[in-house]
Length: 329
Image (cartoon, rainbow, N blue to C red; front, side):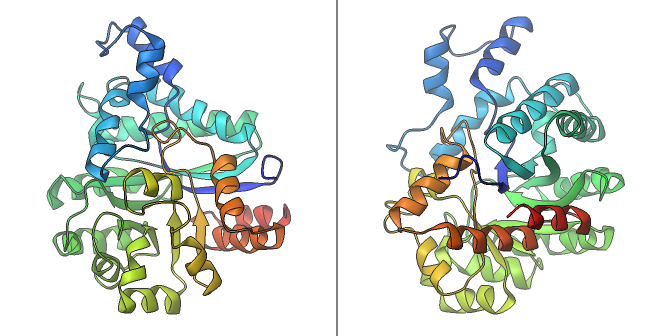
């Protein structure tokens, strides 16, 4: 059903969406040590199975692609290929998120890192019918001082390819407080804010993300199903939840597609979107993700139009892009 429909992906991690063939190719060219010289073995190592036990185990899969993402040229190529792959399944707009400080292992500056990725987006936009923007990720394993560095180095790109800032990585209770001042500054610089919250920890983190960090959107947020105050706040403020069902099943945030709260949220008029999270790690694309959810909950085209338009409205795209995206459906 979804292959030919226009689509929007608001939650897609660059390092979780690297083609395995590209990892292999770069590793050979640059003599980078991989755990195996066998392509099939690398494919297994790059992807997570449904036997995964937690978010922390899921995140271990990112060590492999990061090995080949330490030069501007490679970042440009990997970004271009992500948009190429997305455009082939009719994704018309994508917001790519990545953590710049994970790409400094060989001394590359944050500005060069961001430039390389923007160049990859622009090249893809010039060839394919797709538009893209960047979300800068601050890792929760890093300090607020390191988050400040990312925000300062990225500010010259705000609304020139970069649209927002995020907090991601392993989730502990009460993480928002440490980053309050840094994210206040980010908003002053013109960044929008989306926060990973309520994925591996409670809905209280969603409450904090909105009240303390002033989040415009929430990444995942599934745990608000057990937190009435957070649930009502998300509903009342019409804060879009960037849902990633397959990832949630794999990380054991939920036990199965059937018990994923997507349908409960949607039927209660919460604003939700369906996203890939990590195309390679989760071994999916957006069409397959939509198909499994719409089949599971017996939804149709009119439901899709509502979800699509809510995603357009909550996107960090400019007015002209939003008008274009709305004209497609």
